[in-house]
Image 1 (tube, rainbow, N blue to C red):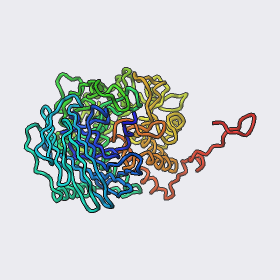
Image 2 (tube, one colour):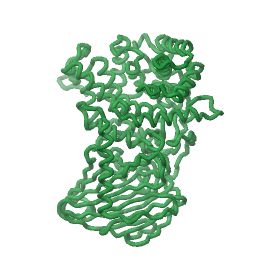
Image 3 (cartoon, rainbow, N blue to C red):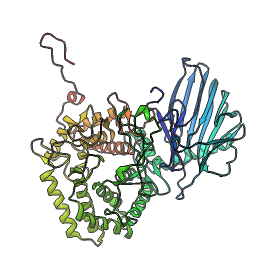
Image 4 (tube, rainbow, N blue to C red):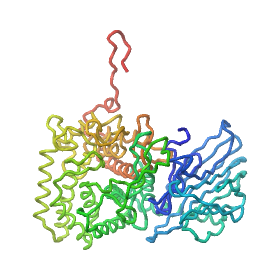
Length: 638
């Protein structure tokens, strides 16, 4: 299993329609094209033998002292992998030029530029595509030493190089070896296209330099809209760029992650396909971008969301499905790819997602919040879509569902689901009043108040002195960290502070937060999982808003140490601090942004970072507790 790099050992590049992962040894081991949710061309991250890859790296015998490092060009999505060896220093720059066009394209280019900055270095290229998740065969047509075409059913992959890189066939694959000295450069371009598409012109270093400038210029220009000027500028910018990279430009629909099948527990079965648009994740991502000043993304997502509501299938009882493909297609049939080994043996590998058919009532709260933020709901079609949803919800909110975590253990009365239906009615009532829009205000207000009373009466557990995961249980759930954020209660309400204390004691492990305890609340799946990064950052925000600013800042700073070498996060953190789950995860990066903004705001209020509500001493915040002594001597336990 050492054939698989750690999940975190990757950087992300993309063009706003598709994206690729590049490992720190120079291997493109994940690329689905022409869309995020298309079948893979490279997927050695899920099977080193059958998945396919494109490796371009300095080539030396093992143990020669070569090291590799990755970084991004500052405030861009240009990824640089540096190789440092006794013979010199070289680097590979990977990038895709973003395209914000509203028209999907079948042609996508991944550019790989090699240069040496000191000494002389040998490089090796190995390009082994495996189409359709490794299920489809391909043929190789080679025009000359600088051009190769891999052909599979419906798809061509063109591989082209500049002078200095000569391809050699290796069966139906291609390899090359070449040497560069200081000041020299070469490039390889991968172009995916529909079968039969004419080959692009052979690349030149001058043309590639122009493309690199265009890519860099796009990201620097895009970031100029960012209004954040806080303490964590670099990490917030990186998270914003990541959310943008995860957004499908032709429709404005963000995906939850670029990958599928990466495990929440290595060797376990919790391996899901996240290359789709979850209503919840997308709404929260867009809200984070709005808070940073990126309003065009919000407009595009609202249009996509409105279209989903208006295009509701007449056979569906619900106004919205919980997730869709990036083009709005609701069909996400789940299948297992049994021919793939899975990341370090983590099986089954799933493509598609059966959770699309679940009932998750909380999405209507996130939808309402996304549609009304910024006041754009004054548009007639937007209001018509939202009011129709709320009319439906008024009749259907009081029923069990599968909840935010998409458990496969049956439907329950989840407190978070009820909380977000309260949000839906609250935002609808406020907006109808503020914009003087037609609405059944009496009905919506009555439903809002009924939800509120039900949560207070049935979601509160007297013995635990906390709001709990589901009615008639005593299980805690980190999703309820959002209760103050959505305005259900004050962050200084005694009932909220006691809930926060209960979570702190049971769900928090050194600032890392578990979603819930699957042993206490079975979710229908075997195995365990790591702590959930979304919840860890929501915990930071909840601490800050509740006045525990010193504790919040310490937790935030610790969370940042779990980022990978280029500032990216997966979904979860494992017991040894390793990143787990699909990568990079939109949930994590959007919650990092909101946590940073909340901390900045609270620190600005206090000047010192400590408020009188923080009941813990600095040593308690840091976690200094004297060890117990062994009854027979002075040796501390543990």
